[in-house]
Length: 569
Image (cartoon, rainbow, N blue to C red; front, top):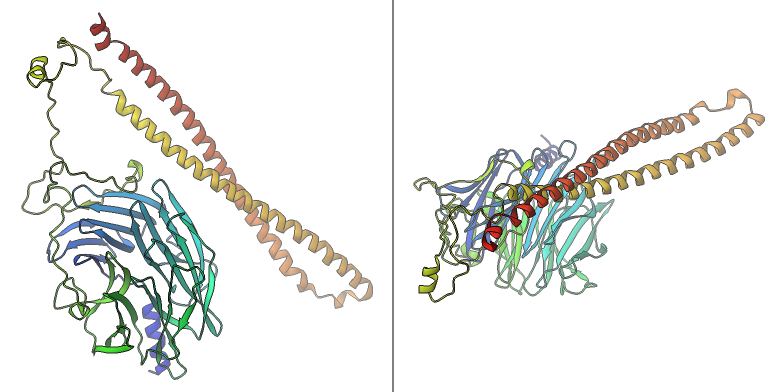
């Protein structure tokens, strides 16, 4: 087998979707997320039993710890559901369906998750259906009220979408993308303003000679942005190079690349990871060896290099001063810990097994914050995402309702407070109807959901109309062009014989006209279906409005009777 054949096999192996476990750390505490094609399982540190599971086939999964008691997860299922789950320590998990993605003809790679208070950010790359080697970068974020979607641009790469997202000290998100264009790879940067929640314009900031095969990036605690990339040399080796932006808070900050490579490595290339801890930058390079380098301001120094025997992990570290999402390796000797943690100066302490329901009961008067996103709608919820109860503890997942205590006037007098009302008869009717209020609330929730669906349908119809107008414009342009070409052909017929006219010149135009007619017909059918759905939605909203008004009238009538009539009498 030749050297070139080995290289092709290695690159083909790297292009497949592999499931890498996640190590989530917050300061010196950690949890571990095991991922495979059948679901994911969340473990506490040094805990043999999981405390949360998703038993559904998955394509991607990612997570983050925002404090020692809260875990955030985002998963993409094989049925196309992109779901976000909040797992707090003292209450049940909250899951929401963000979107339904097309997973049949599209590949998805490189999932990122950021949680900043009420703001939730999710990034992923998806392949283009028509253009090979083109990846689209998408951003979905929860602003405290609604989910929003932003298309951030494209990346050209034959194997993996090369992009990274970092966060600075002011809460701004920084997007780095590397796209290959012929003999050069171009670095584009963009920034999401954490105060106004808007993106800037993508800017080309660096031109790199050759094709970049891998990248890593980090933001230090003093807002210095670092980019590491790997290029293949003509001799078949891989150079690791480096550039830095001294102040990422400046919009026009320049990148300063290193004049020489950090180090050169032989085949095969696997991956690169980087992070900063206590002011020291660490670089992990995974080739035929595991190599760890550090830079404390005095240049790059070799810390360790040996034959690889550790498994890859994705390490998401969230500290008070910095944040990193990077490729790393798992320590095989110490379960669920990163390799070289002692060299890094870390000592991850075991986190108690978190069970949202019963193993850790909340303290008295504890205030449980509401989830940052709404829970699943009942009609689209999945019953396979559930917390795992501990083994030796009985199931008390739903605590008993507190007894209703009615305070008598004498008891109130003993406590020194005035009675609210004179003694009442035992057969007095309650103030609110017991069965109609839940029904009314359910109708209101359904109306809100239908209004959201109606808004989505309107946006879709507008988009389809815009495409329809574009197609009509293209048709009119082609008709004008065909008339011009016909006039040219007629002139040529007058000056030449029929045998000299090339017949094949009209074939591409006929084929283009046929394709445009088919696309116009299909868009017309889709448009009619969308308009019919919108009319059904409007009709449902009107019917629900009538039902709500009727229920409110019944409620008012019953409120006017019963207790108040007897009390006034």
